[in-house]
Amino acid sequence: YSVKDPYIELKKGIKVDFYDSTKTVSSFLTADYAISYEAQDKMIARKDVVMINNKNEKINTEVLVWDRRKAQIYSNEFVKITTEDKIILGEGFISDERFDNWKIIKPRGDIYINNPEEQNDSIVGND
Image (cartoon, rainbow, N blue to C red):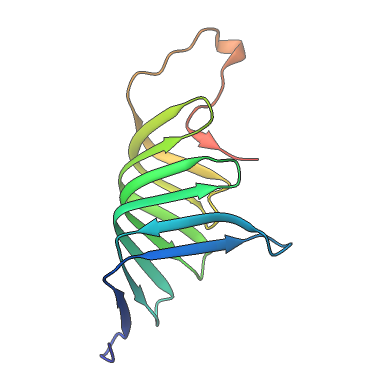
């Protein structure tokens, strides 16, 4: 839409592929709806947002913002991140745009610690 703050509305949903330095798809994002604000270089994905990275980690949320200038994705909404051996729930997260290095802002649920010396940081995902 050509208005004061131009935007593109994607009412039928989106699929975005993210590439690594070797031009291989490293992650992808799908959503049932998105709106892209061209001047701000931001896209807001809504409704059944799913992103999967090359480690097969998956995030589910209802709102995800992709800030192309900062090369980041984030949300202030409820998120569920599924890894190979965990499901982590929380409110809000932030990550690089390929969902390689992520952090849940307010994790929630029961967190069990067997041995403090062998703690595994279950709310941060990175290489």
